[in-house]
Length: 159
Image (tube, rainbow, N blue to C red; front, side):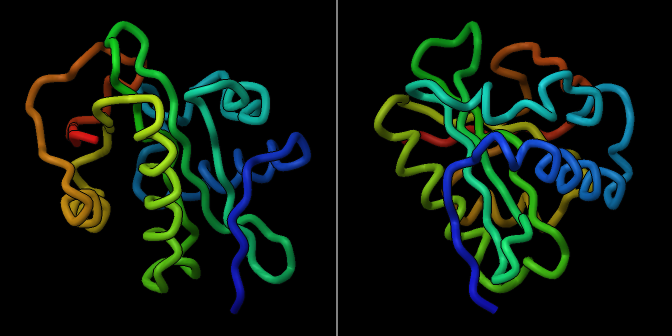
């Protein structure tokens, strides 16, 4: 299978929302305090369109979106971005696609920020292992209060 990675376009908004909701259901995160209730979930092409804010999608050879990742400014903390909404469908896991998405996101983040923060869930064990491979260190205090209060694991990486 051949995959392409590109910046999000307006036509992708609904499909990215479906991708994220599908993954959230898989991990029991279809609830308050997670991306499930994010009011911007279906408008990523508008949200991620300024310097320091980008979202990329990974498509399969049928142009179906199978993964995505975003970098966004972390409001209230200077010089820090947040790795946002990084998800891949099960069929796109374990093949190196997540690594490509992460590399693109971190390379972009380095141009604008000094640190990268992320929030996840305790039961997303494989994701935590993946973040550690990229030098993210677990922190036990949030850098800022986000609307994702159900996310009980946080990481920070020096860029």
